Image 1: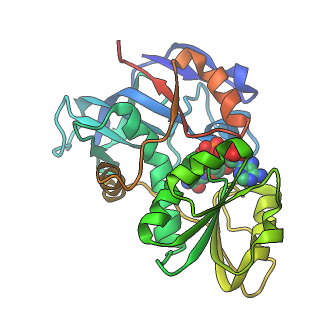
Image 2: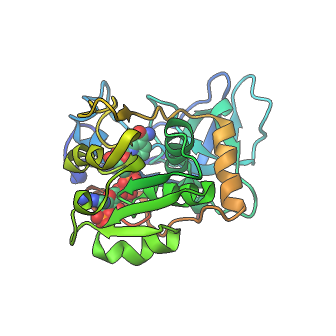
Length: 310
Ligand SMILES: NC(=O)c1ccc[n+]([C@@H]2O[C@H](COP(=O)([O-])OP(=O)(O)OC[C@H]3O[C@@H](n4cnc5c(N)ncnc54)[C@H](OP(=O)(O)O)[C@@H]3O)[C@@H](O)[C@H]2O)c1
């Protein structure tokens, strides 16, 4: 199969394009011919090494979510047939969607509805899983509450804005000037352009924060939460950052993969609660360019590899 892969850690240009052996389906697994795979912020961090540690073996194929068509079944798979369109995210510890094929555990993927494109399904998967688990399950956001969503124009945060509005909460978000209209269209009630105003000067006593930016934004987020409030952080490592306040809880969402969550994402999309984000598409050969954009950290929507589509 053709794939984009790395043979060592390094910059965006370290990514190569070429032939790797086809995967083989183990027991309980299926082979998916990938039609769309997205770039997630984690991909460049894994490629660079450091944040997520060093990879144990090379060549390594990056990428964590996909939509495609099943082309082979492993032993014991009874819930899919060859030709089924499916979507999903790799299990924790697994990567490899920047490729024409991947072997996936059947139990953690879901059928893609006919009216939903492969690009739409792939775009909604890891961002949707992360947003649902963070907003509904970790923060347990209620309709009476005010939430600050940091970095509203990003893939995860955009989904989170729509979900929080659907829950009925009052939604405040931060973004740069060029994204103000975009996050308003997603439903944000109040937008703080961080290039013009420091959110700590205009906000106080929010019930909770969904923090997707990291660094100093994370540290300052604790200042604007009311006593008894909570901060859920996804861009500050795998552990919850230490809360600087005794009266504010710091949480780190544990984003697992399972079919019920994927089906919920699709139901939210099909009922119009969440929209497909704006996309920029690439071929696998263009992985270096896609990573340079992702690493710029000013993306609106999603970057998508279009694969196996003629
Ligand atoms: N399972 C997990 O734990 C999980 C899953 C997915 C993502 N993540 C992490 O979550 C983070 C976000 O991921 P993503 O894919 O949503 O990112 P993304 O799509 O690359 O978006 C990054 C966003 O951050 C915004 N931004 C940058 N600096 C900002 C600032 N100072 N204040 C407010 N917004 C700012 C940018 O908007 P502007 O252009 O408007 O600045 C951009 O839209 C990443 O660190 C990623 O690794 C974790």
